[in-house]
Amino acid sequence: MKNISIIVAVAENNAIGKDNKLLWHISDDLKRFKKLTTGHIVIMGKKTFDSLPNGALPNRTNIVITDDINDRFEDCIMAYSIEDALDKSDDNKEIFIIGGGSIYKQFLKYANKLYLTKVHKSFEGDVFFPEIDINEWKLIEQVNFEPDDKTTFAYSYLIYKKLK
Ligand SMILES: NC(=O)c1ccc[n+]([C@@H]2O[C@H](COP(=O)([O-])OP(=O)(O)OC[C@H]3O[C@@H](n4cnc5c(N)ncnc54)[C@H](OP(=O)(O)O)[C@@H]3O)[C@@H](O)[C@H]2O)c1
Image (cartoon, rainbow, N blue to C red; front, side, top):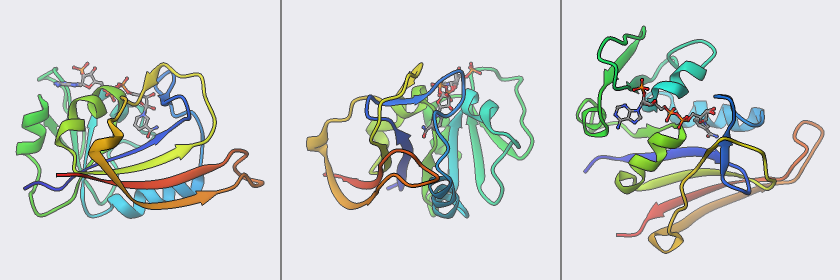
């Protein structure tokens, strides 16, 4: 069985992005994202790839999903459907679904782990994380952070496992 994990940072109102950008900057969360995903596979939609400041994420297998068979991105494997992206993923590595909204929605049924950074504040967005059925998931880890000088809102790292 493939080891498929969704990793996402979500506002209180489920917003995850606006104008093809993230809605906040949480430096610790970005470091955690790097630490968790390095050495593994990251699968993303074309718009999320376009939003990356320096192209492919280093030291990870980058798989980008698009309908455009002429698109080629440096240091990336191109995939043309959800199934194609999974076929091109090495079963021995953790497969991280890193967004955006359309990709999370389509991969939700395949994922067995969810790394959710919950931001305890609502943001105006134009892309949202899909509703999850909480009965299908078991919370296995939770770490809470209070607002501080760098981050003016509270947030939590939640890890869920899919119930069989
Ligand atoms: N908060 C977070 O954790 C987080 C994480 C990642 C991204 N984001 C945000 O999410 C937003 C982007 O999300 P989005 O939903 O607009 O875009 P997206 O999911 O990143 O990319 C959408 C594109 O992916 C391709 N695609 C999607 N499903 C496909 C399929 N089944 N077959 C072939 N191609 C497929 C299409 O590309 P083509 O048009 O080329 O065919 C589509 O236009 C941004 O604001 C970004 O900052 C937030």
